[in-house]
Amino acid sequence: MRHLFSGILLLTTVLGLSVSSKALAQEANQAMLMLQGTVAASANNQFAAIIDPQKGSYIGSPARITNQSFKISTNLPAATLYVLMIGDPSNQSSLKYYNVFLANEQVELNVPEGTNEVNVTKGETPLDFAALVQQMGPEFDAMNAVDKAKQSAGTYNYNTDSLDQERSKVVERIHSKVPVYLQSHHSTAVAPFLLNLVWPLNFPLAELESWAKMIDEKAMQSDYGVALNDLITTEKMLGYGQKAPAFTQNNQDGKPVTLESFKGKYVLIDFWASWCGPCRMENPNVVRAYEQFKSKNFTVLGVSLDKDKGKWLKAIEDDNLKWTHVSDLGYWNNAVAVMYKVRSIPQNFLLDPDGRIIGKNLRGEELTGFLQKVLASN
Image (cartoon, rainbow, N blue to C red):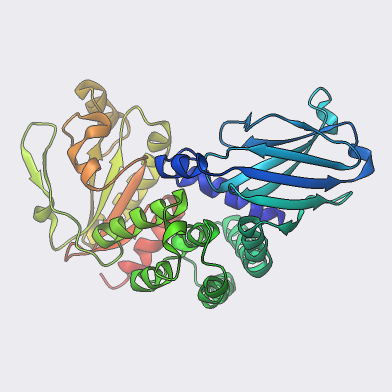
């Protein structure tokens, strides 16, 4: 299950899930983690410690291991994934790391010799996570394998070969397992964590909302619950099939451009900036897509998060971006970016001729492949 663990740790970063939310800080003041662990004899006289994976720092103090056991009592800032370190901090080669989902409660676990996983025997939150790994881990591992194969083939996500069919089967298995898991595991932060994890699979919003209602209120107050509610709110406004919010912003010449003026065309709203390295790297892909499909009722509307007009205009010229551009030079406070809840760039939304969102964050060959399917009849 190591692939699942690494993917989960990455997810916490992608979603921007902090381990210091106000709600959880208040909860942390009312309880403590009481962790008791047993390890192999080879770890005697070494140390056990809990590490915040986002900050790379200890939470509480390391505990010395004696008689193959250790105890850690500390105040966790949130219920989330942590790293349990076993070894001697002065000897880097001795250190071993284990992913554990922890909350402020009594937890008992053991770390068998020669394994990358821990066995939890007590603690509702880590036991819920262990059940998640057991029930869903094989499916996420299978999806990772299919996605890697699709990337290697150079046709990620939008080809129609056997890999696409296999991925659909995996998604369907995950779809069937989510409510089954939530029926038995709905009282800890692991439940909304799971829904954050499956969110990118684009299950119907109504279904995700129904799953969220299966989760206990206290669990929905966790960072993952807050993030899930934010996603649901955003999806109601910016989800697939939703009418893209209307806006007006000035172009390079100070003349107003409205989104409504693009009605009747497929339009890619492309959020970028001259100072954004990944955006500049992606621009050639957008240029190729524009040149290939501009005769098929497709265009691009660039929304820049620049604050220096000169650099904005130079980037447009240097990158040969021949489509319509707008900006209020407000940097991250660009009014359209705020409206579309843009927190990172490059980011884009593909609209159909009626102005409804039919694609998001399409890049490289993914963008080209999607447009080929959508515009096949044009």
